[in-house]
Length: 149
Image 1 (tube, helix red, strand yellow):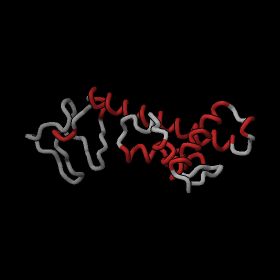
Image 2: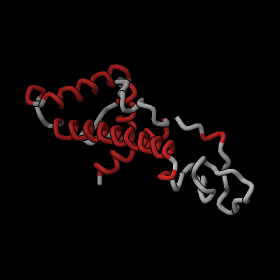
Image 3: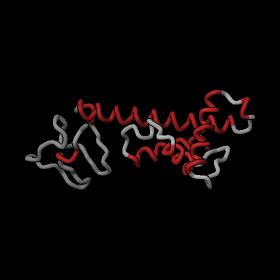
Image 4: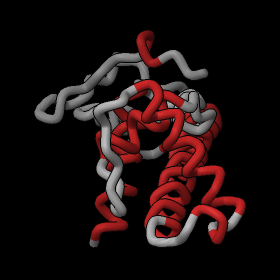
């Protein structure tokens, strides 16, 4: 993984000096790290590979979250014996959630709080795949928000 601590951060209002070494080897000093965001990753294969890997992990988590949201939504009104195998699997995960948190009541459109706890209780591999936790939580929030809209 790319170690960002060894590179210099240029503030938005600063101009790079000629003697400054590049922020990332192989990329000119025109990069800006105001919100830990890189611009110009395509000139650095290591950085590009890292960004691509993080994007893939976020996409997988988003899909896993959306899968659970949809299975709960469409399986909610069905009798347990009429649910599909996927719906049964997700409702079994909800049962694990209720064992761990008995006061938590899941609704037809699951909330962020419940889905995030569900991912933690079931030790979902996409949730713990290597994304920073705040990023993983933001991806789950986005999936909830997108489904509601």
